[in-house]
Image 1 (tube, rainbow, N blue to C red):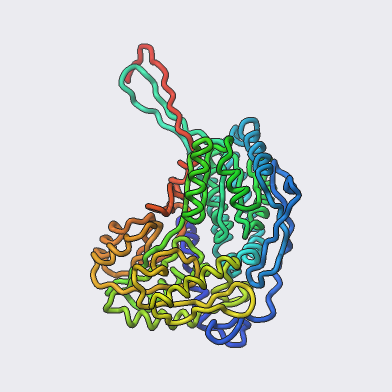
Image 2: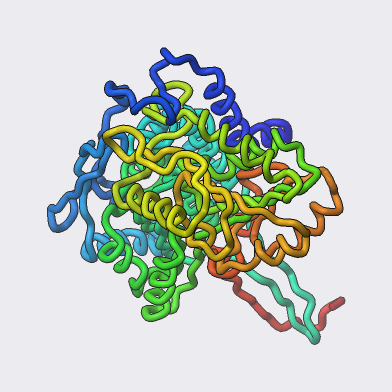
Amino acid sequence: MAAAARRISSLLTRSSLLLSHAGRNARAGSGVSRFSTAAVAEELIVPPVQISYTQHLIDGKFVDAASGKTFPTYDPRTAEVIAHVAEGDKEDIDRAVSAARKAFDEGPWPKMTPYERSRILLRFADLVEKHNDELAALETWNNGKPFEQSAKAEIPMLARLFRYYAGWADKIHGLTVPADGNHHVQTLHEPIGVAGQIIPWNFPLILFAWKVGPALACGNTIVLKTAEQTPLTALYAAKLFHEAGLPPGVLNIVSGFGPTVGAALASHMDVDKLAFTGSTETGKIVLELAARSNLKPVTLELGGKSPFIVCEDADVDKAVELAHFALFFNQGQCCCAGSRTYVHERVYDEFLEKAKARAMRRIVGDPFKQGTEQGPQIDSEQFQKVLRYIKAGIESDATLECGGERFGSKGYFVQPTVFSNVQDDMLIAKDEIFGPVQSILKFKHLDEVIRRANQTHYGLAAGVFTTNIDVANTLSRALRVGTVWVNCFDVFDAAIPFGGYKMSGIGREKGIYSLKNYLQVKAIVTPLRNPAWL
């Protein structure tokens, strides 16, 4: 079991390295193109999956929006509509919350034995594995990430996460507490009630698991809002959950937009807990809405501008590959992306030339084609945002080493871009770009890079690349972030907590810490008459 856990925990990293080797060895006739030489192939692969679920899931049934409205969801490879999805509003949230409240107050889920709940989660994980390719194809079609990443890393991780939380379901318990005087004191860890959850578009199914897994393991019911860009896979997963035996009303899913569905969920008076993953700006709005309504507790996993520090003793070739992965993974659309690459001055020039060459070798194209490393950005808004930041980098006198332009003539593809001579006060070094733009900065002393790395509103993650254990320990403790990866990056084992300092969020996802988000602690005190001992 331990060996299997280790294999799964490193799956994302190993998958990325596998893709990078495929990129270096790809032949010109393989149907995918290096960004520097050709446009995206004209003929795109038809996704091998049918879209079957586009309605809301409320009280165990797929239903239309109360208004009858729908909205389009797009293929980011082409900007073409692939389906029309039910567009929710406040009335749909009210219906979903009512169903979740009834399921919690009157239904079997919170009264079910923890072992029975765990069996349903395990059956769901089995169904995820059975439908791996369908889920992966939907994720890639709607999101644009490479199919190999979806199928070989993210869907297996989805199953692993639910098996992890299934294991916790019957291990949640309180304590017996010694007290002064003749009293028996015990604590109960009770489900918090109806949990409202809002997930983002960059990792739709992984974040589905981070939110839904611990909430269900603790015995709660859920109303989940999907990102308007990527509503399809959560609906498919919900269908599998009901096939696994989840009672009606326990998991409800409403599709729609932030100002309508998201705001209604965040401000709903009958929602007991809120969890949100997204931008820091939106997180502030969510927190305010929760406070202005019933003061529901809120977990936030927000933005980042993570430093990746390459020390003077680094193996440059390995550092270049890991820094490339830390930034370009998932088209750069990763909240913890290593988007500030700090390189010691002694190895800076060598690192820069090799980082540029690695970016030039990166294979961009149809994410369904084998060997593709980078697909399109999620939508037009994000595509234009990335291009604006590239322009800002050029205008601020950073050196554009490669990339910097649109890739191809359709869809939302961006050339892998590398900037050198980046300064800390430039926008590309301060703002979360969320795209394939690597900013390489030079440093001289350890104290200097610690100060510069911490000089940000964010504090989500950091990478450290060194062979010196003392340097690794110094940096790990000095960096004000929630996760420090030493000589690795993006290792997302189910048991490792994830969350940020400062404006990168509140609370932690994954691991034992995530269970606290969905539990209330109750103290029960009873008098003892003539106790034999205290």
